Image (cartoon, rainbow, N blue to C red):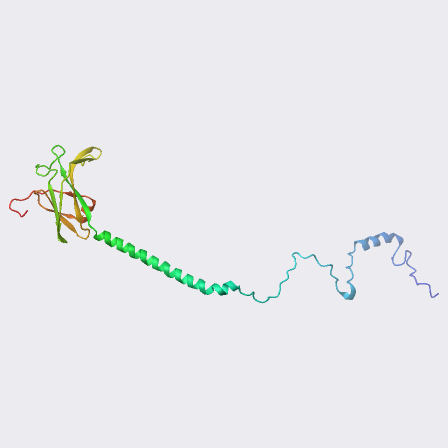
Length: 229
């Protein structure tokens, strides 16, 4: 056997490397095609070589190193004392103004509470005769009032007859006419609990100061003979 000659199996009748007869060649080729492909060989050095990097999703940020503090402005250094003084003075003035307003309010309230006012009241009278039921009290009758707070006696007179329409006590849907004789009393003291009011020759009636301020309705009581007038 020559050196260049290759030893061949005498039983093989087909091409070299494919056993069996020529009829078996297509089946062997089909089996080789169906076999899974071998994975690619790794790159140089036995490790996988990555692909190129992806593009960045955001722009890169660069931060400067901290530098020295900015110099303070000259006007701030020069005006700090003046601004502090002005702020303090304005605060003191504002506080003084608030205290003054409170004091003025208290004084006004006190003066209103002690300042005399004009009291008012009325006496119910007959619309036909313009006088009370017995006819002794009419327009021009004297009104006298006094209190234990002071020795000053207040004087007034009944004024002309006036009328007003009000709801009837028995039937509120019906309006009836009521007549009265008004009067006023100057110099009523607000610090007094009330006044004793006497109209004409009738007996005195105690009337509260609040009633005289809003309008008191005086009920006439005839004088009992022999009682002090």
